[in-house]
Amino acid sequence: LSNGFLYVNNPSGLGASAGGTVLAGGNPTISGVTISGEGLTIIATSVLQGTGASGWTGPIVLNANLFLLAPGTLDLSGAISGTGGVTKASSATGTVRYSGASANTYTGTTTVEAGTLELDKPAGIDAILGDLVIGDGSGTDTVRTFGSNLIDNSSDLTMNEGSVLDLQTFIEAVGRAT
Image (cartoon, rainbow, N blue to C red; front, side):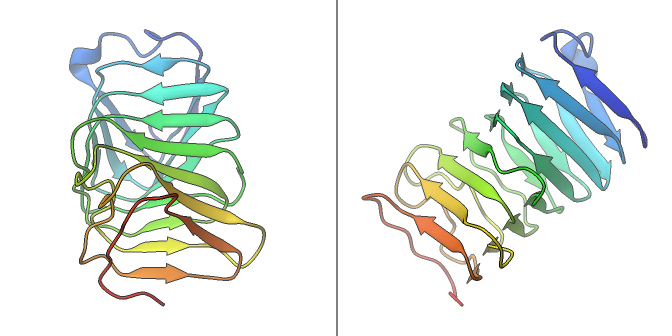
């Protein structure tokens, strides 16, 4: 998908999962469904939006930056890899959840500008490997953990005005915190 919009409200709306989906500046919206087993490759800065309770279970490769919009809940349970970064964009205050048993290995920065990013992987499995920035200076922007050691120990953490790092009862260690 290149520089266009696509609305998906059927789990098989993208066709057979074997071919995968490539975003080159595109903007798909997943509406109330989970796309299962399909790979997603980002080759130019793109936007992925989830409305209602939506999800993507296949692997995601970030060769460029990805903006996530979630007025509802968007659950990404496949491993996320590559050199790009992820921004939970300021125009959607819902929840993005990183779940699943595999580590995310993408090295770009994760930025939460609005709403909540939930880290819900098994304890000790990296949900975030690169640096983490929480908050854009307006409203409350939250990262919530559902296990210990989900942010890599070498990740730098920047907390701006209005940011919340909700560890619940869990433990995290980061490289440098500002």
